[in-house]
Amino acid sequence: MFSKLIELYRFREVLFNFASQELKVKYKKSVLGFLWSLLNPVLTISVSSMVFAAIMRFELNNFVVFIYSGLLPWGFLSLTIDGSPNALINSEAFIKKVYIPKLIFPLAGVLSNFINMILSMLSLFILLLFIGLKVTPALLFLPFSFIIAFIAASGISFILSTVTVFFRDIRHMVGVVTSAFFYLTPILYPLEHIPAKYAWIIKFNPFYYIVQLFRYPLYYGYFPSLKILVISISVSLLLAIVGYVIFTKNEKNFVYRL
Image (cartoon, rainbow, N blue to C red):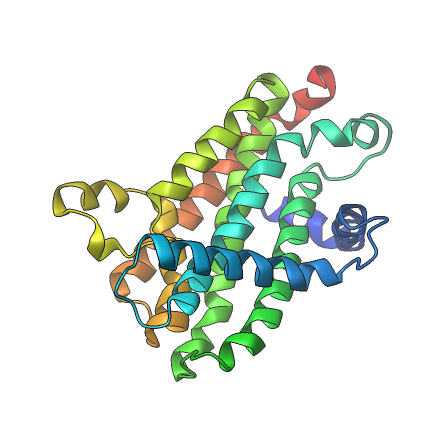
């Protein structure tokens, strides 16, 4: 494992170049270019806030901040999940012709989405300061929230990119599963509004804990509880380790199945 990490470090410039290329392709030929990284979250959260505040009418202070604290990590996770199945398939030419550590291909997508999330947060953070975001010491925890989310997303990307090489139908299933998890994760609604007999189901959802890592400091204004922290770290590390093992055990066969 350490030899793989050392190799990734040696090829770090390749990783950053791939991630940069993904960002450039995403906004290629658009007039505003990278400015969409700043505008998209603002527009998404504005629409979501108006629609869900009017329809659901939850009794929450500052519903915009509540939605923002959930959509920020979910946007990163969902983009990573949706893009992971094609990470190796779209890189077939590189894999067959040039030696590059194969872990770079799924990691490039994760890193690209991670940068996008940071840009989204910067743009929205400034806006939310004017509409009631609590500035508390708990905000200092956010870098750790980002790191934990990145680890979880990397593990998911390793798993999905590997499985898709052998079972191409996974690409068509991912969108449906992602949509299901979106509604099973308390992003647009507080867990307290779910009947107790169903709430336990949501607590078995690993994404619930990752979202809480952002919601606690951003919306509630305090550090995540020890339980949330322990479970989210455990889930993220488990996903990363399982994903790494699955990926490295199968990477020698990628060239024959692509």
